[in-house]
Image (cartoon, rainbow, N blue to C red):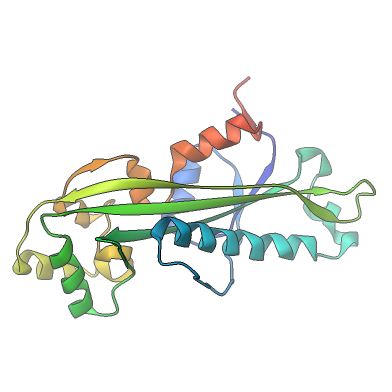
Length: 219
């Protein structure tokens, strides 16, 4: 596989970093410091909004960077810079479930999900920057966004099992109060869709989008 663009992951999520590494991609991590502003209550729109905000915040830093230093950071022959923003939410019965505020909140979320099917949405926005004709500044030359949805069916479990899981500490920094890639997988009966999407990044769709736009090639 040939990578035709420099990639920047606008996230400090260790799970997203690991997934991109597993795909064989080379990238740098520059976490976004964007203020998260949500104007919709629809999960698919929320993840797209937040992914755009994250990618835009980091892309703007490159656009504003002093031109005399740009070529020391970026090889203009590499096809430019792609900034990747992503966000993931868990939704049940039309309600978005964020990270639990405390143990009681985590227990309420898990009891809600027990024996039911919920959805996990991940949105991705990529902004591509390239040098202008004079090679004095970077300009945005491409931008694309997409989201994926995965259905997750949970086994029925009682309050005691939920409390036991909460006691591990794993649910406290996870949307929906569980992590499918960790101890939380014992609560999951089945999924329909992309497993990696539940982990936090729709890797298969992402690689397909890159290939279709010639940002990666297999020849």
